[in-house]
Image 1 (spheres, rainbow, N blue to C red):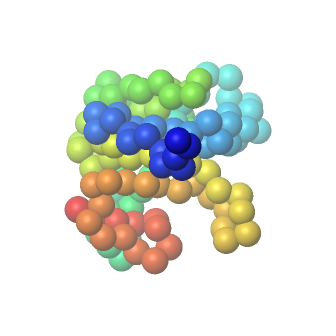
Image 2 (tube, helix red, strand yellow):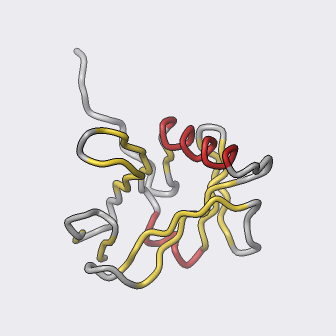
Length: 119
């Protein structure tokens, strides 16, 4: 029997899809970065309380949790990790919008644009 359901993301990690990882590599190459990783964090703000923050950086900070996904390193500050554990990061380039998409099982509410969430 074939099923279209995606496997659940383990609650103790963050999953970056191959498409999102490829887009991160593309941005890093465009900026001339040879060594890089993706910083994924949250900050207060947005219409739902917390906003996602993405940045391509040269390496992790001392308190970052380091996860390797689809050939890239992901750096998550420990304070942000509790809000992001189990999240999937994907990239869409479809007609309904272009950009990174977060599927966060911890979010109890999100804004209409998907850029902010509440716990």
